[in-house]
Length: 103
Image (cartoon, rainbow, N blue to C red; front, side, top):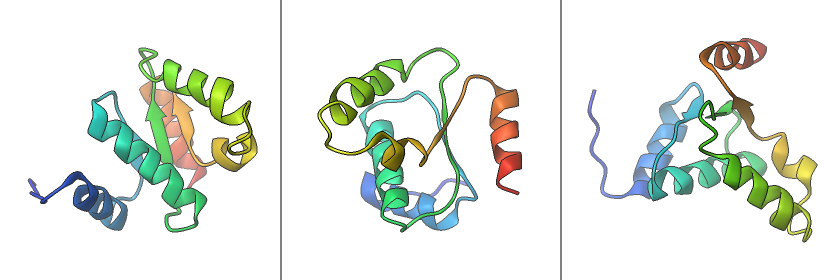
């Protein structure tokens, strides 16, 4: 089913409203916007579904490095406050294992 929205913010809100879980695949700026939006929504208790970052190719490694070396180190947020809001899967089997923990 194709659903057209006016903007990425509308698409993000629609995903949150209808998704059973969020699996983030490598993508562009809109993907990164959505990823951080989902995490922030979960941090603020506006969203309670699993967020899984699929990182088989290491695409998101530099994002994790940035979080570790800047945001956490400079204490803009605590690691525990953010890190437990999402899971990282390195292959499809890990995605399924993470989803089983939420059932």
